[in-house]
Image 1 (cartoon, rainbow, N blue to C red):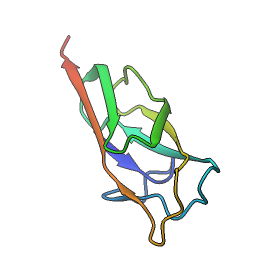
Image 2: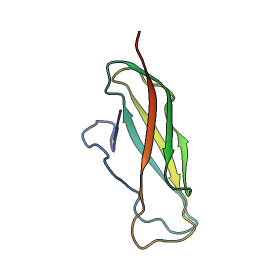
Image 3: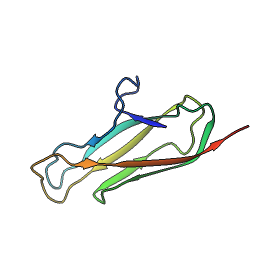
Image 4: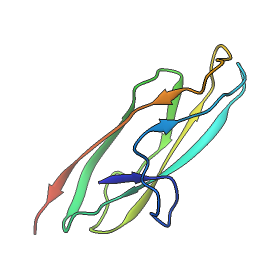
Length: 97
């Protein structure tokens, strides 16, 4: 599995930089999860390493070569001077048939 900035899969998201958001405001983000394996992935789990970043949706399974959206939002309690960098952890079970 790989995470990309755009659905065209041209730029892999090696690091997630959420930029700056004013305290109390919300900003929504969409990234794309690509199953680059030759098998189906099931029981996909997704976590973000910051409590102020809330997962909205992500695919629970992806067929081989399928693309799914990961949506999340950030609503910081304080305004930061530098953009927040976050890590998205994605796991899944490979299903061989």
